[in-house]
Image 1 (cartoon, rainbow, N blue to C red):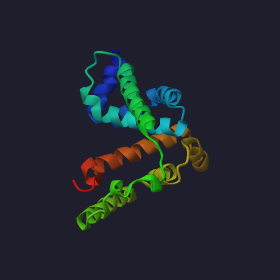
Image 2 (image 1 turned 30 degrees about the horizontal axis):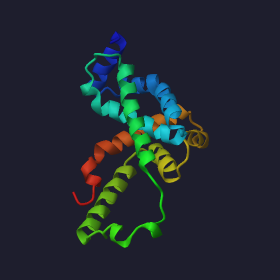
Image 3 (image 1 turned 45 degrees about the vertical axis):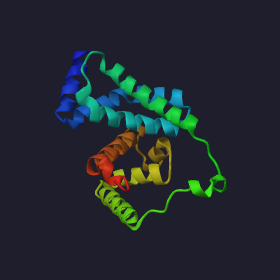
Length: 186
């Protein structure tokens, strides 16, 4: 492993946000290009790339340095992209009328409904606590489903700045909302 990468990994392990930002800036374009080529969908590739960097951040302690850092990141990318391709291949859109009555989802119980409302409340609170610009970018990307390029144009920011803000917002939400807190009926 290159000494520069070794220093970067160690800094990230010490929770140095600047080091992670450097890693992100260094590898983002390459990972996004790879994802676009494989997925043939820019919006999906952007989402996959954000997932990759979230995985890199959360799994950096598992990186053992037996290969170059970029090779490890590409391995994560390949796995995430392949999973998306498998899910995409297995999905078949059907009309609700085609679903037999005995196969429809069971209505949520009162307890399940309460838990779902609580989870939604936690999510709304966590989003409200984000910095204003991160909230705006998150809303534009996920509620209005705008492409990163369009968001950058609307906010007069670079695409990399938008991607970085989106990544930080997602990372903050992931830290505030453990995965099981958003699972109904756990």
